[in-house]
Amino acid sequence: MSRILRVGMKASKKLRITPEGVKKFADIIEDHNPIHLSDAAAQNVGFPCCISHGMYPASLFSGLMATEMPGPNTVYLSQELNFRAPMLVGDVIEVCVELTKFRKGKGLMVMNTVVKKADPNTKAEIVCIEGKAVGMNKDVTFEGDSPAWSR
Image 1: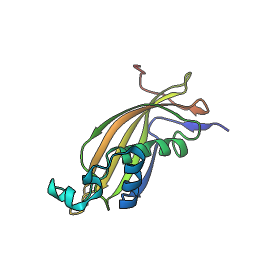
Image 2: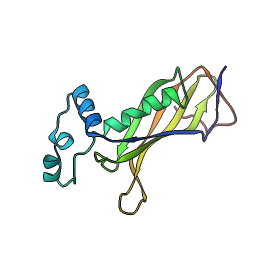
Image 3: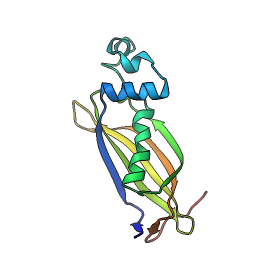
Image 4: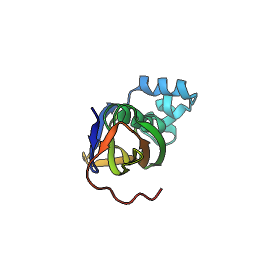
């Protein structure tokens, strides 16, 4: 049965940035910059502790799109990213996607992509990463209207 999607639909998941997760990601991408792996190195450049690679949380968009929204059989075609704030080891982040437009006949869609966290002092929301992704899924049905497609 086809999954029904419409503009405004969202999906998200939360994850704690752990030293083990950062280390595994560092090993996979072969980026062992000390600010990701050593609190002393991170503190030496002004961070309170190790920071996550920006692409670690950004890479989580792929899994969210494949499992939640748009769902299985999604092809991730492109991604634009802006890194706004660091994500520290120990931070709980929320990875979010939101459908903003689609092309019914092609199965193409544009999604806003955001990674955010709560400020530990004020609990205010901090946007760490924001961007836009384009995906394709020919197993979904689009419902309603979409803003004009400019690609």
